Image (cartoon, rainbow, N blue to C red):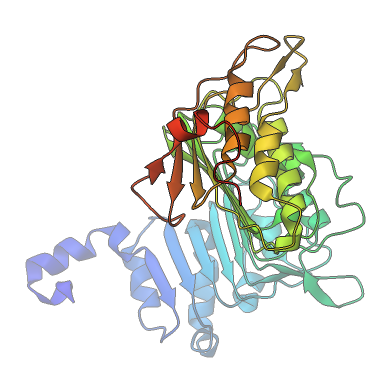
Length: 415
């Protein structure tokens, strides 16, 4: 459109190769030849939305194949089998490949050609063959609802074992994202956790893959999972645990069927949300919190100031009280092998928030006093506030009842 404004604009645009370097295939092919010519030697960014028109023009197919050495990024919504069949042996500079809603064939010559320089791979709602060799040297890997064909020809969810192979082949990953579902295998818990020392950003929505890797230097970690039915291995929490050691302030929120741990301030971002667990899974939730804290504080305690939210309901007739169990967990010292002494979990616990009417005051008073007692163990930081909220969504903090709790001589607010 801008070329029609005036002759000068047309000359400027025609003389700027980068303005012609993005080629979209999906509605006609008339633009392909002039774009290839005007882009000169500039790297090409190819988007294949549909090939219906392309395959009707054999000349365009050949032009695209001949220009493949200039491809820098490719987005595929359809596998370009005929174009790839015509590719020569010239070195490829392609570093970014996005494949959406596509079945990758068994004889995928394309991946063999682009392996040396490929750095970013995205697969979305796509299917890989059973004999697919993971690409080496990736810096970014994004999987969303990926499937695979098994040897028996059945299309299934991506297996834990296959995803583990991708991680093993790419130890220099900097960005990792996994959405959808990963099919567990018999060797799920025996696969060795892979160290990804350069990993900086990770998003995981698949709990049975949390334990497949670990990283010490992440700056952004996001783990989300729903409907957990079994306890993940402790190594599942190594990566977010290491990142939490460097944050300034964090929140731990426990509700009925949900555990949420987030970094509130500081340069690092952490979010771990385990949601959708039924009320009967509260013992599992408490066990997971214990594993999480043990892994995060394996060598040194978390130094961040911690806000604890206990918002779980206790249904009538049920003996297990999740809020009290969390207090009991934090009131029990753990052994520190590096110092040879006992210590408190999250020693800088600052505030506790609860839903009205809150936990029994005498339990809260015992908790605060126990952690402040330095007779047998170095005391933790003093709790500075205990808040009663009408809703866990309250932003004003609620009513501070710390003084009432510490003045309690019995069970004043007990049911």
